[in-house]
Length: 396
Image (cartoon, rainbow, N blue to C red; front, top):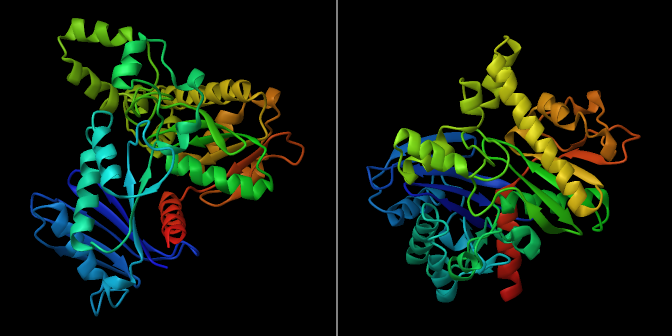
């Protein structure tokens, strides 16, 4: 089975053609500069191809993708009929979607309804869906939502202590993000542990970071909120702060609300603390060279992640398994060690030799650790492909 995975941004479109059973990727690429001029970068058959192609809208971008997939020289399939389904990544499903679903008019209307919650991403996701429908009208399309995995949270976890009308009228609450990644590593952890009845904390750590508390395969809490700004400090995002900081900064520096939000989203986090970079590799290098601000940024990040792990262990009533994933989680042995230092009281004990691993599935806890600590590389595209295949096959 071939599933085409689409991740549409406002002026870009990422794609992969994947076999959901094996995870084999036959082609992948990126359309960028949509609405400006258009450029396609395509990787297949061990070759990288870059083409300048006019892309006045997402429809032309999709057409360019399909054309190169069936190209006699650079393509990987003979006809678009060999594409069995299309899986679309959609940022925000609000309270409408608890799982992935086959796209129809009602689903599109519900995604539109969620635009106020995802004003930057949902319109772009819809453009990708409509573009695929236009050029592939008979191919099943599936929406996979970044928020869906977290919809099993109880009200005590997702409600904010604000006047109730904001929730009732505007659906202001915790939603959480990176749900496709959290779903994938949860599924994989359950397979690796050999049982579903586990208390699990997932640490998706990268330029954007979030944690989730999972019990029996279902999310109980997560660190991001109404938006991806909440939680631990990130590459350029502040994470949790006293909300009154916003008023203080706006009043003192004459900022508008949008300017302040831009500062919190794009000029804060470890970039602000280090004064060097939003890339953890650069910050680690700076710390090694004696930069105290870089050392502080690393300490702050590890401290906040450690606090979330501890609070989620309390919320779950214990901890069986701790998972590290995403760019920093998968590749930084030093950051994993920083985070786990001080969690011995929970039964977390790393094996320094096992922890010396990058980007591959491995147990990194000591043999006598009460909590099993894993590195599980995330694969959001595979999760999208598997969800898409399961729904399409079930509908046959």
